[in-house]
Length: 150
Image 1 (cartoon, rainbow, N blue to C red):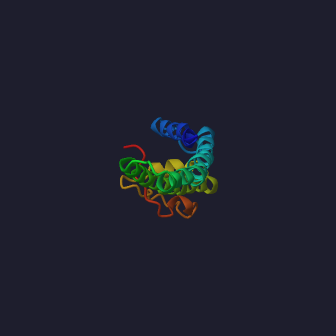
Image 2 (cartoon, rainbow, N blue to C red; image 1 turned 120 degrees about the vertical axis):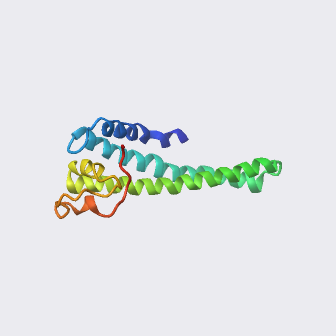
Image 3 (cartoon, helix red, strand yellow; image 1 turned 90 degrees about the vertical axis):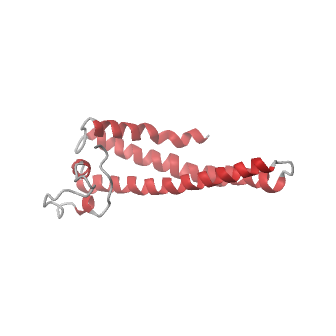
């Protein structure tokens, strides 16, 4: 059941592979992969994880903490640690979903070329000074990210 959250992993790996081999900007395969990554990430890691946590995890944890009386204290401590890890994972997935949404927005508003311009920015992750920022403000909207590849 929880393996479904990894449905976006092949698209993440394919995206890295395309960037590593210079397949960026305007390529139909790269743009299609970005959209598939967006939908699979939203479905698998955001919506499915929230569903699994709320409708499967919370009732089970309620039983472990408050209904079952024979649960060892060490096991309850381990469950608390795992709850913290899952909560951090949910927060990170929302942040990554935000970044992926900005990427898809950049592709929609500026075309596939915006991805290669964004990645080929300066060493500090800021966009290059090309003078075409007015043509596509979405690709230079203050999102600072380290370059994908060094």
